[in-house]
Length: 301
Ligand SMILES: [Zn+2]
Image 1 (spheres, rainbow, N blue to C red):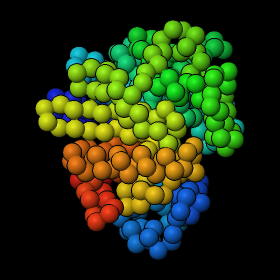
Image 2: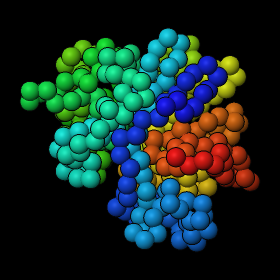
Image 3: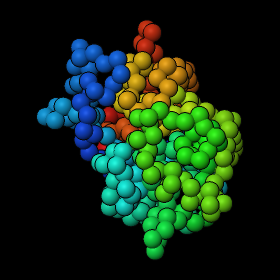
């Protein structure tokens, strides 16, 4: 199912998981105030918020781009059969993600490039799959791209700097089973900001949520899309760019980057594609005084 077009680029959505994320918004958002959230709840329910459980509603999802002769997979979810004491909700999953990828028209061998926005638990899972007791790359013909800064940070044997204690707990086992096997197989390419994947795709650094978080900047025939991973998790952060998630490693830098990305999206009238949006999974944004407002097309998925 082809869902989006950005100039000549065809963009396919592949769902891994959807459900209640078991945290009330008051605990999830750093800087939360009830009145602001309640004012926009009608716009958020049910795609982004479930009142009955007072919790956020979220997706794990990937995007496949057909661009410049390449098939590019952006982010790989939580993966199947992983031990995840840091967020048990994402452990031991058995989702039909590869079947859904096939339904979108792509087998594992068709993927030329995998881009990991960052190396958190819910963005690298399908990098590997379990084969005879070993974690092996899922996409055998792909180069896997992520930032060198991110590798240095999350690799327990890397040069650091080290994650926060909370960040290290959330990411327990993740580097070992979903990143190290790529390094061992020689299929990882460590990149810096400004890395050109192809004529239409550039990877830029957007640090804060994690220090080497990548933004995938797609431009084709005057149209633009910004795949921004976890720079924001939820539409309320378009209204309130100062509200961080509890998983942002550097709180102040995360706020600065979120605002910069929203400014860029508004200026360019770009499609903004965050990692966990429900509904139609993406939006455009417009300025509203000193903040921003999300613009959805309607037609929630
Ligand atoms: Zn995430």
